[in-house]
Length: 294
Figure (cartoon, rainbow, N blue to C red):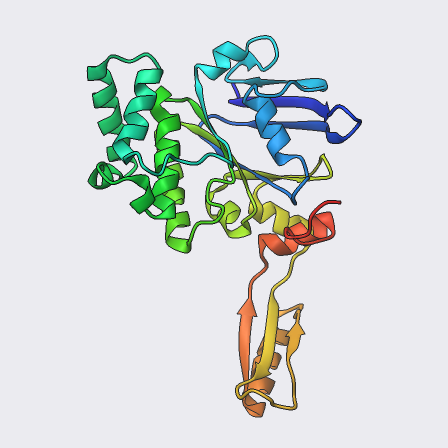
């Protein structure tokens, strides 16, 4: 049984704005599934429908075998959701955030203390337990937010832009946490703007453009399907060289060797850029991830 199943999902907001149309996909248990798309593409709307925070206008979806419209309570008991706008209370300690959430969930004080320690150990937060979140790095604050969500010991976790605004070390700490979750069998569905994040984390991904599915599959298959090619960049070693900069897409190994030999003779620098998910994204949706959908 899939962890998530969606069939012909659609969402039209009051006023006529169509956020999603005919969206169908499946997510396997224990899988990391990334949603990619420009701002306004419909990623957050889709995530909120699956988290039972929004009702779809068309189609149907199930999470962990339960219908998102007919059985929302059964789903909410089994999932954790971290919205993009979630922020910690800066004057509370890391411990207080998670412990209080355990109490809110109905645990006894003893169980809440045990569960809080377990979560903080799993997320690498124990050594920071007594620090107020104002004194924590962005990556640690995000782990605190995720720790609060994990008090339910979820079977599936929905993360909306979990590493947005974090520095490279903070982003990698969140990636490590996601890997620990999936290693324990938890399904993770996340939205992201970062192509490298999707390539590193996703078992499979889906690109949404203007509310529709533009692609679903692995990152490698996306690159193969769009014919994204290696680029060879040839440029001067010294700035201001009159020869300028060339970006070439060789079609064979022989052509690559020829480019390298010519560049060595001319004393120019050669850089190889393998095909990337961003290259495939641009070909699939006709623009970069930074371009907002108008």
